[in-house]
Length: 329
Ligand code: UT7
Picture (cartoon, rainbow, N blue to C red):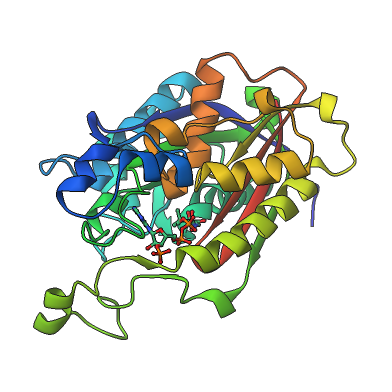
């Protein structure tokens, strides 16, 4: 095989819906409190789609922002990939809906399901098309509308999730000259498939009237069991990301925002200074596939991405899957 082409990030974008859902909102439906949610998760509020908004709308906004920041026209995009498990329809994909709305008429389009690791998995996969010289502009996105598939009466999960989407335009690094993708780590362990699962409504167990009554077509999570895995795997990915690099060489670690306690445990274990970890869970909740992408886009907008320094993404989610990315800005 001929030499691979180094890949960079030409532009970043994100979108969160306008509707702010405070913790107190849930006390109307379940036995919970603002105090419990803040203490156990770090979440103060999250954003949810209004009834008249579509999950795909979020990707249109995030994708448009990333293209504008990259200075790329819609027709220049060769491929759109979206990491999501809460698309508008089970079939067709959100990527096709978004391709049409953005006017990316020359782009191939497909979705990828890697749950909360969706953005990192998508970025790793999308970058291969640039690295091999197949495409010049790839729009990768991660996002979820988990409010649409969560059960408002299940206090173990409904308080955690927020809606949102994030996007990146990938190009050959010699073109965009920033955000060099130095390496990825993608991993999975299917033995844990049942820990975070939407059991009914797929090909194996279709929706029946009984399923609708029981609400078993909604997302269910065994939080305590997942917690243990999440801590161990987040530490593992961050360790991989740091590698032999000095902490002074790292400008920002952007973990998937699943629970502030999990992020803090990993940060403390690896002696990462507090100001080097991006946190948005207090404002947005757990936005699943979007959280690393939103963190990256907001950090760029806040001028936190320093030239030639490392940025580490670390994600973990249903599957079970976990993934990391090492980016040199
Ligand atoms: O993003 C994908 C990956 N997801 C994760 O990594 C999530 C990982 N898990 C977690 O973040 C935490 O396990 C949760 C936030 C889901 C739960 O926190 P926890 O500290 O692990 O609580 P717990 O499950 O051990 O439950 C403690 C108690 C239980 O009551 P009992 O059985 O001790 O009487 C729960 O029923 O807290 C109760 N509880 C709640 N109480 C008030 C669970 N949810 C709530 C709630 N409000 N919303």
